[in-house]
Image (tube, rainbow, N blue to C red; front, side, top):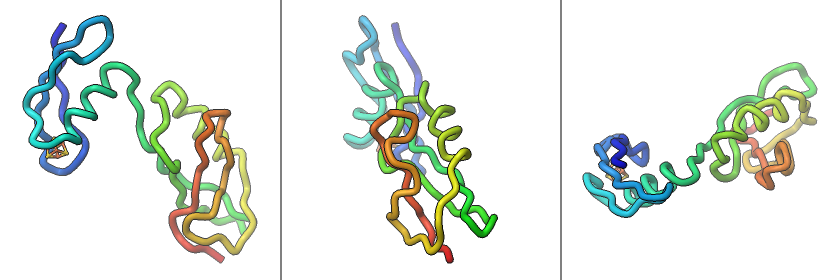
Length: 116
Ligand code: SF4
């Protein structure tokens, strides 16, 4: 099976062609760099995404956050729900953990903007 993908690794958006066998990439073409090859291999076997959203602070205002690493695609809505059910205490600093082990993924959600 062949899959066509657009690499999301940078704004160049290389068009990737991936030959897939048994759910794994056996060849990747169209990538300009190694990031594209890695993206294609992951995307066809276990797709992941960084999650960016906001968490509510105890002053009633939202604070920007993101997952520390990419999350399996099927866990994204669970991670967002975990963040939306959390209120953090201010002050918050960039890199502070807002939600630990979000939705049991083992991945923390961290603050991306100083607040309070
Ligand atoms: S393959 Fe490399 S150059 Fe092309 S879009 Fe992906 S990261 Fe950018």
